[in-house]
Image 1 (cartoon, rainbow, N blue to C red):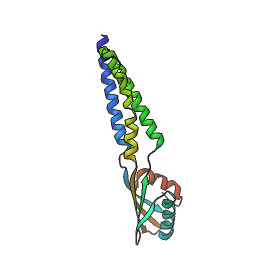
Image 2: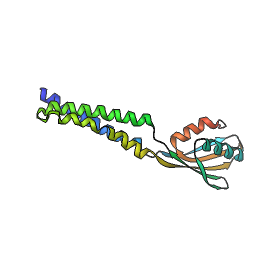
Image 3: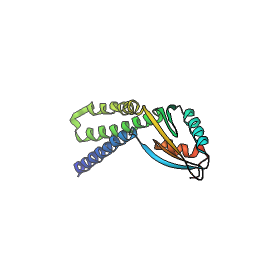
Image 4: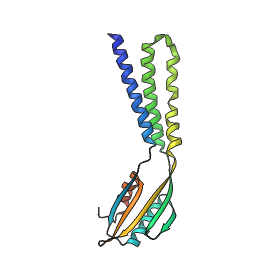
Length: 169
């Protein structure tokens, strides 16, 4: 009965590590989306506000045509997330080491070395998360003001909605 408990614990621990692996991969995934936002301001006023907002967030304008603006910036990795992912990996590998040590006692202290691999999770995130990011904005005049069609990281779009403050919806 004890052997079944240990084997089931091993299976659950391995499933947890698979989940951790996919969580790590998702932490560096590109999340570019396109959104349409309605504004009450005029197109030129919206373009100026958008430009000031993005330049304040360390983006630089690399292309400007009629009502189309292209900005380029660099996404910086989060120290908190790097540490958090390293701690998650540490906990997962400690659990795996404990289960393997109980299941295979002849392994001795070899399994105790597994948690030493946890900094690789933080290193993976840190090396993959820093990447250039483009924001492509197209401004269209409407009867009520202007419509902004923007292609950017989804978090950037959410912050932009709240920050610009001149949006209707």
